[in-house]
Length: 247
Image 1 (tube, rainbow, N blue to C red):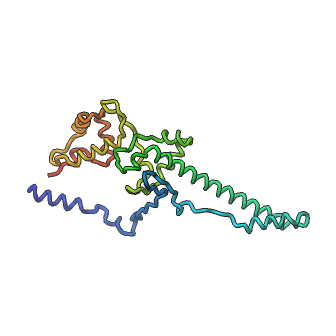
Image 2: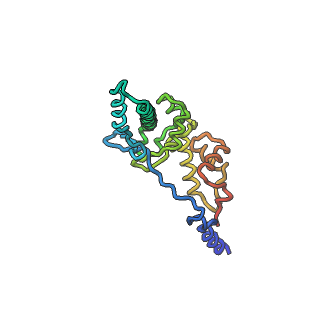
């Protein structure tokens, strides 16, 4: 009967088709996200700090600098072995200083990018309201911080920010723009949120096709093609209408 079939489907969907993957044999380890930035809001001001765990302060031991100074103070009395040792230590000191400078530059790049994102999306960071997220692409931030788009892309795709509203990857704050019938530019995220809500409230016995979803959005004032609706639906990991059908 339909009731028996519905009960069977509900039971089957709870099962894991690859039960061995949950154990240690071939199973992927759980990923723990450690935020690279901490974002807080105090008295209407957004504060950003870099997670020190991912960027510790590095120093070079003074012992090695003093060692070179001692060798240099001997002037002509330095043996060949001591001279070789001094050159070796100096080379390693220069490498260490270069490495530390590179880490500092990286921190400046990260903080500069995050400050630009927060300034661009300040209304969102002050309220936590997702509808306040403005359309923002990599080029917008690259132009602000005067860096290459590829640099911003690497930061956005690999870094996380801990905010009062949750921990999100930086790419969460990026979205393309869509023009409404009134000529207003809105974030595609807003359209995706509407799609998620409409599909969540649809009659599961008669799920909405992409064409019906397109017509619904057009009634709301969003100029959008059916293939674009399909693209957004796929990005949201929502299956087509026939696969959303329930008894």
